[in-house]
Image 1 (tube, rainbow, N blue to C red):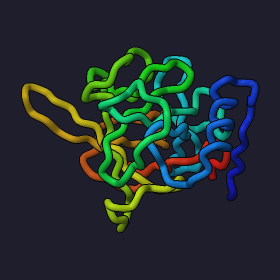
Image 2 (image 1 turned 90 degrees about the horizontal axis):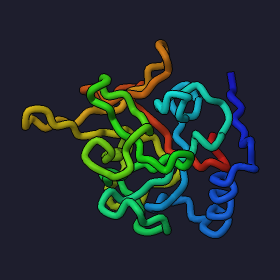
Image 3 (image 1 turned 60 degrees about the vertical axis):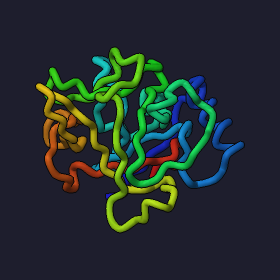
Image 4 (image 1 turned 180 degrees about the vertical axis):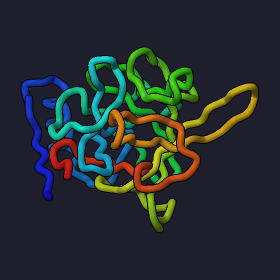
Length: 194
């Protein structure tokens, strides 16, 4: 079964901004500052729900589906800059709320956009390309990746893979030790998400 994804609600300011940026920066390689959407294993697009949790299951791009890839060391810089490679650290600024995506380890690692206005460890993700891709090459749109987040508990530091819970409530949480199909995500162009 082929899924059809479409851009809806172009009246939204964030989507208009993404279209304008894409028209002036047509290179397919991902830079910091790029506006993206994230596709999961069932072909749906991640978005924030009414409780500010990051969930899948959405088939259309809406304002709650857009994120800006930012450098965790310079999170307020929104102009496009250095290219992103496998192994790069990124933060995801939610375009609707302007908050950063955060792993809430008090709630099982659930991803949320409810409170993080600055970037710390729980808002910093390491982006790893799936398969054999040189760390020297910038990643293009459409790259299948895993995302890891660092947690520190009683001075013990661990990296957790983000997992998409398709069979349950379609939430995304940072609680996987290894990367399998449910831990793979696609960094997509909001204007061409599939």
